[in-house]
Image (cartoon, rainbow, N blue to C red; front, side, top):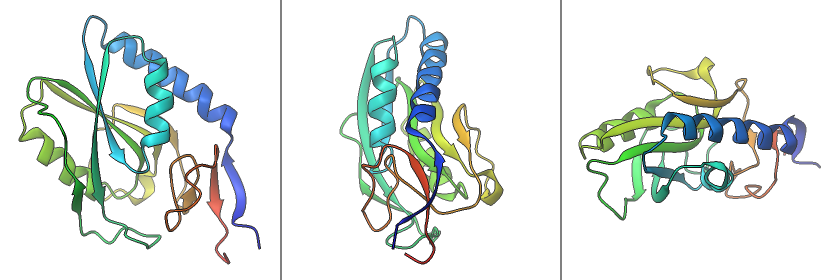
Length: 175
């Protein structure tokens, strides 16, 4: 049985959109240094491709946050699994996220990060599942709006598998 029900976003479309997002970020932050704050583990592939295309000075930090566990739907219980290495006080921060679903996890994270006094805090997500949004989140950079389906690939996983697939696909529900 194949894990892929159907390909939703091809590798080529992802790379084209990542280039466009990087161009916009570079324009918005001309003359500044930014810190790309990657939400692990899902945002790693997106961060890597995005950072290579940004034309202003960039630093990285990583935070682990979870609300899914091994399920295919958010549990609503948020926990930080890995905190930042560096202070973000006075820095321009862009949260790099793989997918925004209900917004509950990101809302929790935003409040946590705002308490650390960054100069600015923006959000860049590859995928935006607005249909499930229960919290209003101001998203500054969006790769693709997506339907309410369980998506895998390009950093998104199913039970920690398939993150390395270079495209986004809908998980076969019979898998």
